[in-house]
Amino acid sequence: MILVTKWFGTFIVDHGKVLESRLAPKDLDAIVSRMKKMRNREILPDELDLGRKVSAVAERRLGSLGKIVAFDSGFIRAEDYGFDIDLLKQATMIIARESLTEEDPGAFITEQVRAFDDLLATCNLMSERLREWYGLYFPELEKLVDEKRYAELISQDPERKAMMSSLGKEIEESTGAPFSDDDLGSIKVFASTTLEIFKSREGLESAIQHKMKEEATNLSAVAGPIIGARLISLAGGMKRLAGMPTSTIQLLGAEKAMFRHLKDKSRPPKHGVIFQHPHIHKAPYWQRGKIARALAGKISIAARADFYSDNDISDELVKLLERRIEEIKKRNPNPPIKPPRGGKKGHKKRRDKR
Image (cartoon, rainbow, N blue to C red; front, side):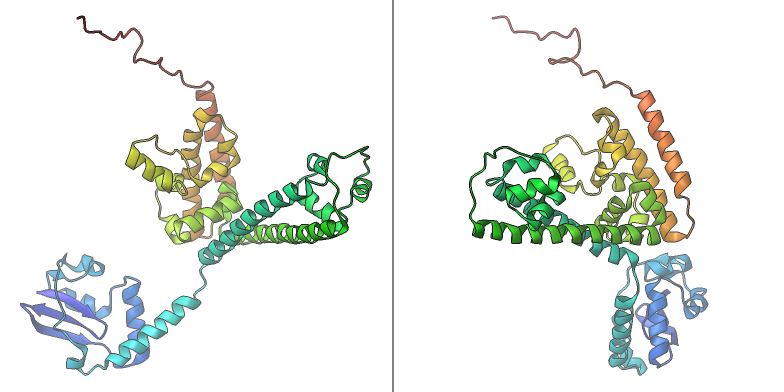
């Protein structure tokens, strides 16, 4: 005998015949509640009652009640038990709407960091274009200020003398070409647009940091707010990140390199997006793999603590990570010795004598 559950009831089936059933109330709210419990992998009271009489079940959710078997229950139809299919449609629509309105911090963080990365790419592109364009007129300015200040100065007054006056510096003669007033006016507008994008990026970065500290305190402390947000985005949400093993977290963002390794047998990647963390990209190349592994391990713990509890263990995790990194540096102070070309030491290739 097999236990089978439908949206409208629970049944005991043997050789294609229904032996016993427990029908759900013909009420929309009751059907919605029943379907939510099934979606959350809960066992219904009717299933517990009938489950004592069977030895097999038709779905994984009921695996604790009996052996899981493949079974076609299409012959158990709602209309045969007085249930209208429109009732199922209404219940499904209610559950879908509620799912869309449920607050998922991971979803908001994902969209924020994607927008931030778009703005970052746009900033880099427009800043490069501005430097190439204005560099024709005043190439010396590029070495004096950073990217944002560069756009800010041009948006105020692109004329050379006014520029140097605002910087409090003097330049005898520029190697740049002369620009007309129309040229300077055009580049001033472009610089103003570039500056606004810089400000938007900074504002969004601040918003991500604030959101991460609220919703993912431990992850934000261990990985950093921006890297943590990128990990959530790459994983597909906080829940999926919390369920990932350390090795998967370590390689998030390095999928192309991994596929290339599997296809061409090239060297496997040692880290993905976490390479942006200062502990990794500032470390010597021979230490990066071990540090990435240690960092990914602490990120895994931090993500689980954030998702499954409200405990702030960030200070402890950061201390443990720093201690582990110091151990790695002490044990691996020098780069590994590479074997000489031609194989092992002392090995000589034999030549055929003819």
